[in-house]
Amino acid sequence: MDSELICEETTPYTVLLYRKDRELRLWEVGGFLIGLFPLLSLFPFRSAPFVVALLLLAAAVMAGMPALYRAVYRPRYILYKDRLEIRKGRRRETVPLNRVKPAYDLPYFYMIDGKRTPLLVSDDFLGRLNERMEILRRGWE
Image (cartoon, rainbow, N blue to C red; front, side):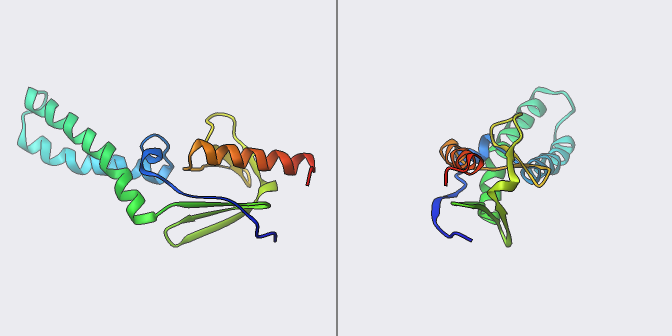
């Protein structure tokens, strides 16, 4: 395998605020449900304090879970000339670029081995990945 590094990125917190994978979404739902049960016992349902507390809980979960996810898994993406390496926590996956195709529904979703996979990276990284896949597809290298 060619080991020439093109781009490397550790997922920034701001990207995790608006790009999410299934695991992060489950973390957010779980965190919200865990916080919801104490609120139900503290405030009367549909009261003004309950609604305010619910909104504060939602804001805290939406802001806090991406930070926690980033601290636990430290997602990192490395683009080489011929492959993409995805690291999340102890998991490490190396995928040849000829097995990666855009999914076309969202810009950060790709089909890897027939499975729809979100890549939690910046637009700059996605641009370089698309450029590299196009170079390989056309056989310019």
